[in-house]
Amino acid sequence: MSVARFKDLCVDVSCPSAMVAFWGRVLGLTAPADNPNVLVGDVPGKTIWMCQVPEPRTVKQRVHLDVHTGSIDDLLREGATVQIPATEEQHWTVLEDPEGGEFCGFVRDTVPAYRLMELVVDSTAPEAQARWWAGVVGGDVASTPGKPWYWLENVPGLPFPYWVFVPVPEPKTVKNRIHWDVTAPALQPVLDAGATLLRPKDDEIGWHVCADPEGNEFCVFLPPAEDS
Image (cartoon, rainbow, N blue to C red):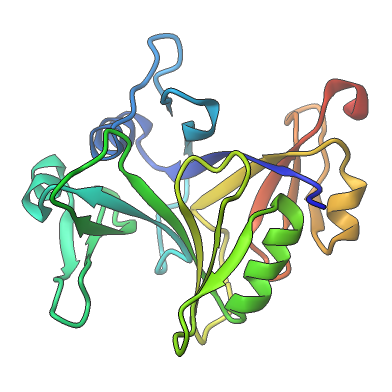
C-alpha cells in the first residue's frame, strides 16, 4: 500500500531562462506565458520546475535524466556537450547540459513527442532504494539478472517509464540538484516508512522537505486540510 504519489520534478539552476529553453527543446515541453520558470506537458506529472539557486554545480550529479533523441547531434545543436561517447558496450552517450549537469542520450529511430525516458539515481544500495520507493509511491521493482541496477516501473502518476537506481561506491555529500515532489494524504506515514523530515512547512514554503534513506531530498505536498 503506497503512502504517496509522484507529483513532478525540480531542477536547481543558475539561469532559469536558459535552462527552461534548453530542457524544453530536449524534452518536448513548453513554458507557460504566466510562469516562464516551469516546463509543462499534457499531464501535470510532466511538470519540471527550474529553481534558481546561488550555488553552482560542484560534483557529479547523483540524480540525472535519460532522454530519447533522434541523434546526438540534435542534442549538441541545442547546447549540450559530450562527456563520454557511446560505444559498442555502452549504447548511450553521457552529455552535459549548459550548466554542466549530466544526462544521457539514447538514440532512437522513432522519437516520441515527450522525450524523458527515465529518472536515474545513484545509490550505495540500489535494491534497497528501489524497494523503499516502491513502498512509498507504488510500482513494481524490476532488475536484469546478473546486473547490479534496479528500477521501478508501473508507478502510479509517473509520466516516464522507469525510475532507475544504479550502484555507486560513494555516499551522497551535497544537496541534489534534481529532486522530485510527491503528494500524500498525510506526512506521518511517509516518515513512518523511513523518510527524514529536513524542513517542515513554514511561512516561506508550502511543503515539507524530506529525505529518503540515502539522503535524497524530496518534497511532500499535503491536502490543505492536513496542513492547516
